[in-house]
Length: 356
Ligand SMILES: *Cc1c(COP(=O)(O)O)cnc(C)c1O
Image (cartoon, rainbow, N blue to C red; front, side, top):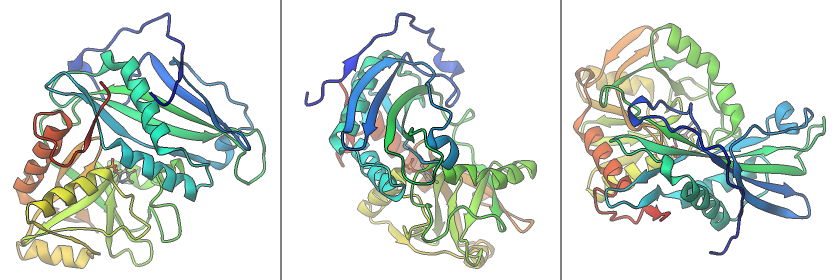
């Protein structure tokens, strides 16, 4: 192995939750990975230590100006007993794109993946086995320099934590209800929409609360200039099946470039489905709905993989999609991607990476 991380094992192993009781992101494993950065020195002292609270100077710049980024991916135990990651090289690349936007120093992509592999290896007993469960991996970077001035920090911590998570769907692939937000916006060109950074989510909470109050689970975001074109859903990318075409927003700077999005597009095109990355306006969507051309809508992201959408509310007008049932394309995509992630299907695209 190219990297030699120090390892300090915990003396108090935690009680592992039952697979059946797992929720999302509430329990964490026995260990975490930490690495330091200092200007002039680079990234150093990568180590695996017992999971524990951090000690931070209250003047640490991330606490005041939000210089923070994060990633999300999952590890599965395959049907053959291997421990697998899904496209971690893509998370490494996206990390450096986000870092570049936030003036956080780059991390070598091999080092990023090696750190994930080493930590998952140590805590691999935590990977749940039940259908639909997995070990969620959360790498993140925080600016740690104690300085109350607005400029890029000179010190950082790169940390990885792991959380065993349950099936995103308690009752199978149940369609979600979305609130189309036509006042608040998530991202604008030149902003940080394509970066996975904490600030984007803090700024999205308000609209999410409004959606919840109205009885909707997530927000469908529109563009920030005209409130006309569809962008994405909460923390996932949006897809529409209109006629015989699949449509999703182009990566023009305001959309988070989802790895699930990329996997979906690759698989569909490989199976001769027409996929268009283009702007879709709410007017076009309403027309397609009225003419019966809107067949399916779904959202894509690591947490749920494919999340069918059964209802949209746009300016108090309710649209029920595909009789509030999961569509054929969404179901096929879920089965295919989950099948590859868990080794039940052949990994024809070489997407999985073996931890052990
Ligand atoms: C993480 C995220 C996605 C989905 O990305 P995946 O790599 O597929 O998990 C989409 N939109 C937003 C805003 C996100 O934060």
